[in-house]
Image (cartoon, rainbow over all chains, first blue to last red; front, side, top):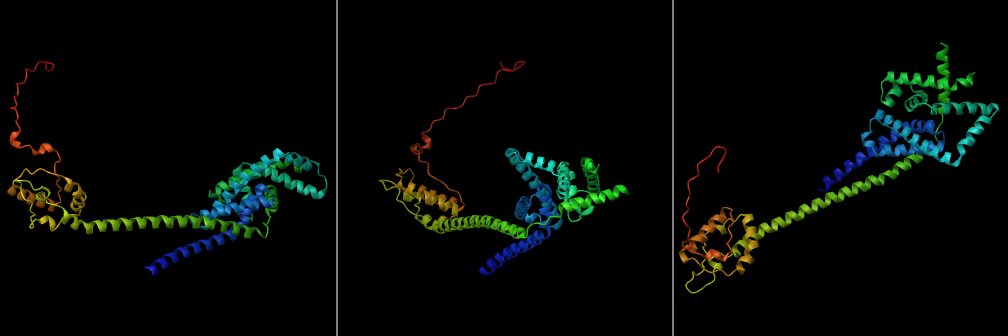
Length: 184
Length: 188
């Protein structure tokens, strides 16, 4: 009787250990992806790490349903992006209350030196990406992370390749339009 | 061609924006955060174990009670007085006598045994008036024993009116009048 109970308990421990090992593997291979997705929205390292960390904690709770690699990464990307958007909105509300956003924009408009001009261009590019619809925004970000090709982005978003292509085209078009004044 | 070059340059620009590495402590922080989730799972498992143990304990207690009732039931059956024993001795009344050959003591059903054990105290407290002679009493006891053996329980009617003789009841003859003529559209 005791032997059977021990064997049963041993099976549970083995299953838990197996799950933990699989999660650790997913964590190592996807941590940078989750961080960059969050960073593309928040553009603050600490905020992005916080959001990615919470996304991994949520993923761990549901890991029994997310064991498959592609499914896990797709779920993680969507969850991280959604949580980052929520955090960005909360930050914006807070900044608006504190009147910081107006000061930042004024500083952006007033910069003149070369080094700051590069930063300014990057800042405008970020603002243009922020202005994209969420679907286009996520596609352009994922395509820009770690050199993901069309197929990988399609897998991460669980959409057909053609959808990714059309969204990527639309996203580039809109970004060019928004940034055209900088090239003139 | 120029458009493609522009796209490639544009993509490189976006890639450079996203080429940001997390801090070296990031992975360790995530592992620590995930480890915080583990107690929650253990807590759930602990509660599940308690629930299973409670159900198992309940089943064991119920089985023990059922078994003890089953073992105690023949004794109760033996202690149960027969019809003749329940009838107090009065002048001219039938002397109680137990029918040893009755099949009730041999194989009482558990259900019958439980009911009779429960009713024993109540029945013993009753003071019934004898209404049958000795032969009828024995025959009735044998009849009851046979029925109990087949799993049917009979109880005494506590109403005092049960002492009335059937011959004392008078039933008037029933007169049935002929039906009236049926008119069109119904009975008037």
